[in-house]
Length: 265
Image (cartoon, rainbow, N blue to C red; front, top):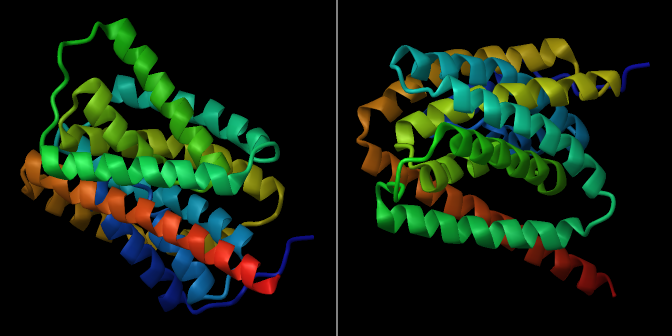
């Protein structure tokens, strides 16, 4: 039997998707970092169902944003496929690792890495690779990026795009526009894979998830237009600020949670 879901209004669900879609289009991420807090804090979803509905909605949102980048010629489909396949394997491994390792320690490490990466992207502007990579090397690195992003998503609750985009910029020398478009393509693979699992576990109301996703379809395309209207250097710096803030939020949340635990003793 399917678990009971909150019954928010259609307008509320569409609004959540619209916010997430705009972020997805501008920054090349899935939008879960916006959706999950809104679903839990505003619409009273429990944490598991919020993550499950966010992931399902990301399928539509990422598809829309990826199409916008693709039409502008800002996607590398071969590397996107390699990263996506690596992400599927990584997310599976992450689900198993989550039960063996300390999520708090992992979140702290990822949070600090993201802060450092964000600051580096902001101050460096456009980052170019030192040399052109051979196709085989690029594909191997792409699969590795997907694996790491998938594992991070599984064990630390980090959206794949937050890891994929800076990794593609730094390790593959992509400009920010192509990195974001390729990230959105890869996110489709992990979102579909994760949603299949969540459907089997009966954590997703497809009607609600579809409404959220539909809400983000148009705003994602608007976000893509904003992204394509910025220079690669400006967009890299905007993304750097975003990544640093996400990492900072993770660290602050960990400290607050620790404080609550200590206060109980």
